Image (cartoon, rainbow, N blue to C red; front, side):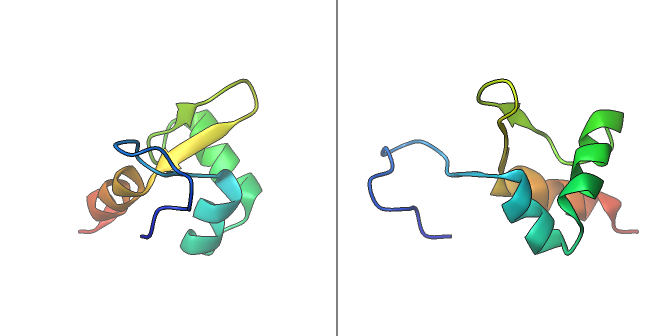
Length: 67
């Protein structure tokens, strides 16, 4: 994934709930429910009400679901 212009060097680009939900083809509310129950991908809280996800964590979570 290409880093957005103006992003700090060395920082991982973080995805929003909407971005992750769109990529997983689920609703943002489904991702929020997974987050609340602890079954979704690892989440980082930038501030209250601002969850963010690393693409690598989302991919690792998906790989962990495969059988």
